Image 1: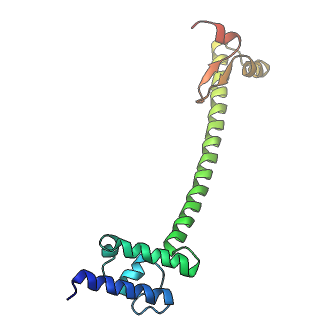
Image 2 (image 1 turned 135 degrees about the vertical axis):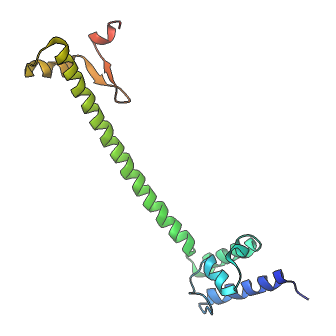
Image 3 (image 1 turned 30 degrees about the vertical axis):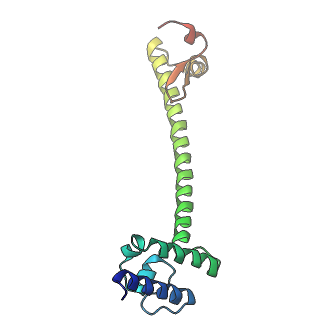
Length: 152
């Protein structure tokens, strides 16, 4: 007399055969755990928990017999590709924000220098850019040259 788990295992093995042959009876025939669970008429979590060895056997046979990764791996690879692209775009946007922050710091330094000595001469403003402040590693203005040597 076989128990309910042995009955489930027998149904799962039969479902694996039907899916790999391409003759599903209950499912859509995709090579996934969801289709295997539907085909075997067992709960999906039963495959994930109680019969994990059969799930792994299913995926191994899918790789070996069809010479292609299971649908789950295909989806995951697509997701990885999408995430890499998003990360690349995010890093490019961050670099652009840093560049803009540096420009703002320089413009602020020019304006502060203009306000401190009252000069609004455009030629003098151009000289200020080259004589005193540069953006630091985090976008903060830092003194260079003569200004760096002066104590605060």
